[in-house]
Length: 189
Image (cartoon, rainbow, N blue to C red; front, side, top):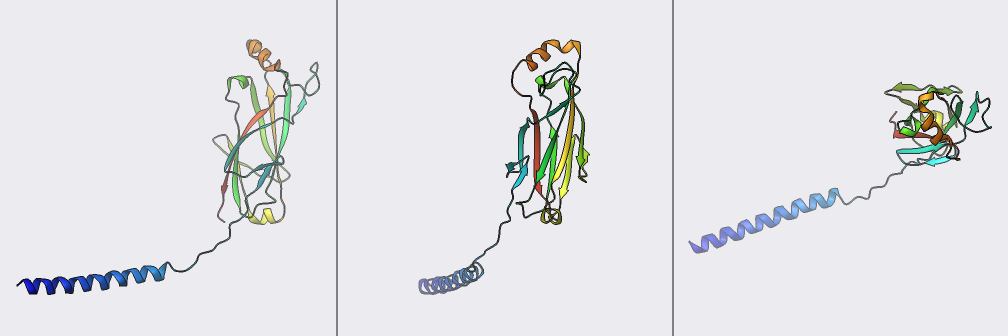
């Protein structure tokens, strides 16, 4: 009886070794090939600043002020309106993408400032959803070297109840900057 158990164990050991070798050979054959693929370039420039991630918050300081009678040139104060242009240049990008932009004036320092309009110019058509302005930039547009231009206009409300915060915001001595939040997603056409 002991001899039969030893022979059965030996036969099972041979079968197990054969199966393990066969399975290993299948996996080895399947995974033996080298894989290679190209990665597309992704460099989007917003006002000449390289935005190479998927989201970014930056500040726009090159603002043109209008309706500023009695205010120093290039200064922002209550009652003054301003505007600036965002240029989105994907010239060094090899994939279609969608971008979204929003202006973040939620901080208490900006409570008296409101956005009048965000409009695409030079045939830039934006869609809006939940205060986010977005557009799909196609690969054909990228190859044709299209640059999106977006004009953002805003006003500093002249409200007497804001005099204390107006004074703090206006006395910083620094140029006024608008925080812009942009997100980028690869778009599969």
